[in-house]
Image 1 (cartoon, rainbow, N blue to C red):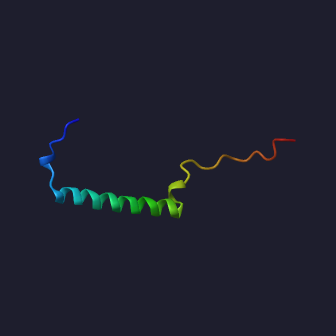
Image 2 (cartoon, rainbow, N blue to C red; image 1 turned 180 degrees about the vertical axis):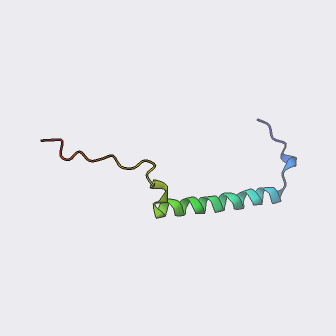
Image 3 (cartoon, helix red, strand yellow; image 1 turned 135 degrees about the vertical axis):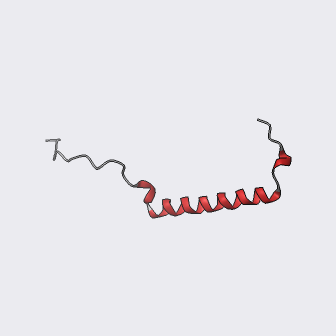
Length: 52
């Protein structure tokens, strides 16, 4: 894929860099807080000790 490099300015690059930095911070906080591991489905019902 060829991209016309004259299409983007240094200001465009800086804007993308700032957006990526903010996204990384938000993602890191989600991981550290454990929010990324919220279960999608409720836990399976327990059938007691099935290894009798």
